[in-house]
Image (cartoon, rainbow, N blue to C red; front, side, top):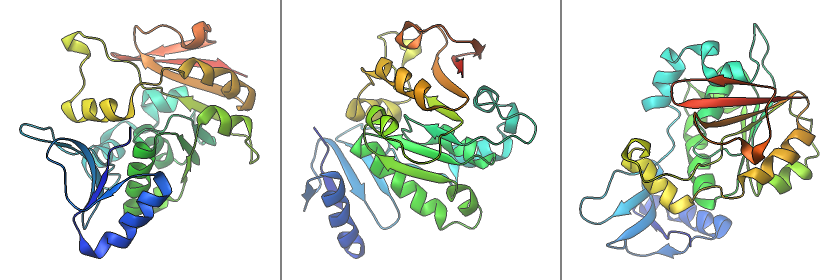
Length: 251
C-alpha cells in the first residue's frame, strides 16, 4: 500500500497534484498522526515516519550530504562500484542501473563520467529520485552530472526485455536484500523506514537472466558480503569489500 502525499507548501500544490496523478498517491489535506507519508514542502519531497520518536525523513540529495562527500572524497575510480563496472583508465561505459533505489551508486557512476539509465519500479522510490534529480539539475555544481542520469519508472525485468535504445555495456543490480534479525545487520533508522515502505526485492533472482541477455559487456551484482549468489549463478569473478561483494558476469 502506497503512503499518502501531503503538501505543506501552498505554492507547490499544483506539483503535488501532478505527483499524485502520475504515481498514484492519495493527496491529503492534513498530515496523519501516525504511519508514513510523503511530504512535499517548499524545497523537496521526503518520505516521513510519523509519530513520537520517529526517525528523520528520507529524501534524495545529490547536491550536499553524503553524495557531496563521496563525490569529492570517496576515492573516484578506485571505488568498488567503479572497478566492478569496468571503469579503467578513461573508460566510461554506458550503465543501466536496474534497481536504482535512491540513486546513490548511479550518482557515483555518473560523477565519474558514465551515462546512467536508472530503472525503478517503486512509485515511492521513483518519486523521491525524480525530485532529487530536479534539484540536482538546478545546481551549478552537479547539473552536468545529473544530465547524465535518466530515470525510467517501471518493472525492471519488463523494461529490460523491451529495451529499444542502445544496449548498455554494463547492467548494475543492487536488489534490496531482506534484513535479518541480527543487530549488526540493521541499517540506519531512516533506511529502515525506506525498506518498510518499499519492501525487499523478493523477485530479484528473475532480474539476472534478462540483464545478461541485454548487457553488451557485463552484469554487476552488488550483494552483502556473505549473501548467496543471485539466482544461484556462479559469476566470472567477484570483488569483495569489508561488507559488500560485487559479483561480475562477463559477456
